[in-house]
Image 1 (tube, rainbow, N blue to C red):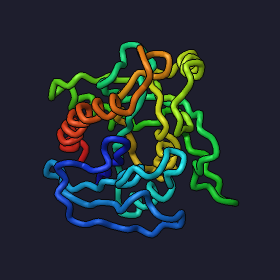
Image 2: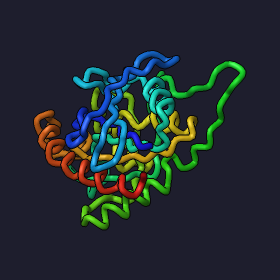
Image 3: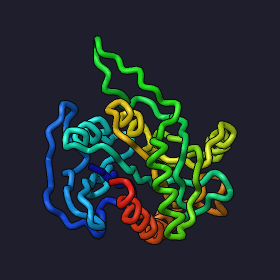
Image 4: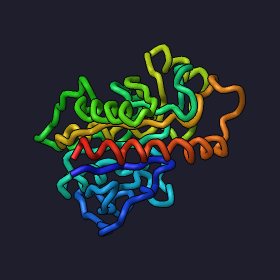
Length: 243
């Protein structure tokens, strides 16, 4: 069973025929929003709005453990995590779609493991994203003639503020191509639960110091409106391969 976790710009999954809205109790508290079970592109899927239906949770406030635990409890085996990000690499400009193969985690203070006293989990995280899911997304993009970047390093910052130009320079030196705030701990929690997980990122702005002027939410929302059309199309075609 596949789940789609939507980030900024994807708090609802247009085209989803809703069958049931589920409030799942977890040992870690409430999920960001009710989990929606429905039919999308002819397939049964679950959908969860990472920041809540009204985008009320900042990146560091998202209850990632509850979200992932609840999906796994419903029988989910694979997840597509959709993220809105900033572009660091010059070629990854607004409206670019990136399917990253690596990440660097700069966050702090987030509950990032299901480990407990006497039951410590040391999950292998060499390759944070499931390669088979990446290949399915890439093959689908090629099939529908949608241009995507087949790899990239996602730098995960704490937020909710945007970064300084100096911080972006540091991230670039570290090897980051894109920057966002929600790829972790979502990816490692999926790994601890043995869930297949892939990241699908939409570049909505150039990162600090890479744009000509001030980064505005109006411009970000404009790109989100355009880019999420392509994201939904890619997912709709890809799930025929994944399920």
